[in-house]
Length: 105
Length: 485
Image 1 (cartoon, rainbow over the protein chains, first blue to last red):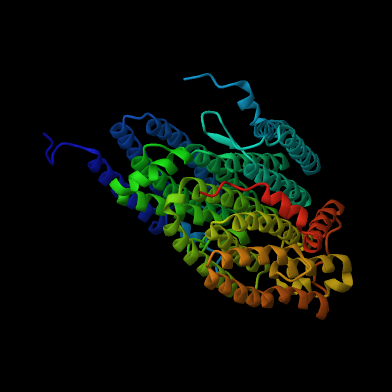
Image 2 (cartoon, chains in turn brown, cyan; image 1 turned 90 degrees about the vertical axis):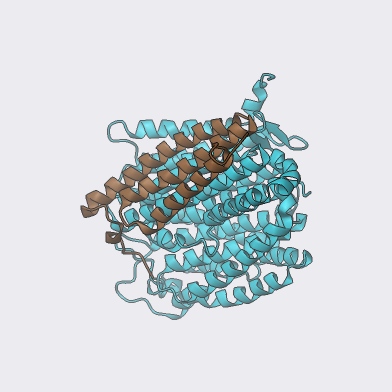
């Protein structure tokens, strides 16, 4: 018999929604590039939780395979992001995004 | 599970070839002094030409054919987009040659990234599964982030890369979250599977479906730079190296429209009523804000960025019509828009220097006297972007407006017509400078780059040709439609 304390798909969904929100807010609000990179990882990992929870509840492997692809792409994204971050640091000796504000209007 | 026949792999030969060519160029360019910009351009253009030949050789058999367990599909729709993308990438490569040479960085890297991004785009056009579509999208996006920051010692280029990366990653994340919810509701990520599971899922899990498709739509609107998800566009377009700006404004937008239409038409026809309303609102906002914001710009690249936002709004009109007429109008318009925009950015590149000349309106002063042919072509592009005959831009807009009116979206079409009239003001700003102002001493003279001039001439000729004789392209676009359910 399932009670509120048994962990089901809904619990995973709530967790992943929270992670997604934290990540999104972090990307939009935080001004440090490293924190932004971490927030991007949070968003992608919240998706993984969703995919794996649904995969489990559907009894279908597609979601888990999708999650493996997401992890691989997240690694690529982190590599590119860090590359751009290093270029920023070499130019300005900082990782604060507020320092990069030439283009606006 | 039955084995996959070899011919299904062969259907992806063009993409495989382009990928290999891009990787080889990357390897060769990292040995010793690398390759010169000219060599890399020639290699890129030849590879793209060979890719096009392979594409035509494989061809389109009657009817659509899903391949590789439904991951990709070979159909006329993908064929049209692929030819468009190959043509536009080739022209971008020619436009880039001189620019990359003057930049002084490793040229091979630039062109190999261009080819890798193009590979992602071709796969996007063929994508028939949310998984393969997303991976292809990421291949395009990751290459584009690096391209935007290619001039890594210039602060503007670096800033463009950062802004593009952060907001691009956010939009990919939103799209992916939407995909995961749709998977949760339907239990599949194949486009046709989603479409057939949708009616039942909409009954049992309406919240998942509603949030899922909306997040997917937001992610896609981000990628095509539609208001209010356009915030990254102006800064990235100004800061990125100009040929990259052209690449983003044309190829990236075209490939994103290819998957947007594919997902909306094939996977989500069951939610037609919902996404039509959202798309109508987004299209109207995009046309209004894109054109109004372009009015006040002092920088030509920034003006062109807002103009490209506005053009995404026009194209969305064809999408929301959800009819055959709307679909071929989208295909026609994207091709015309690609040629016009590449020609325009090519002209900007010709005037550009290290100090970012060619970006102020005043840099175009007296161009009609100094380079009459170039000025005439720029005049043609400006008229085409406004949508004045006899140019391809005129017919493109007429078809889009007609399709929207026919499908009952008259109010959106009216906004489009009004905003096209507004756009005349800022496009003519350049024409006034070229024909009615005198050049002073620090006005830049156009570069002597024959290849680039030929590319611009090709774009101008094609724009004119589409304006007087659009029927062949219309016929081709009509033969490249998706089935409308």
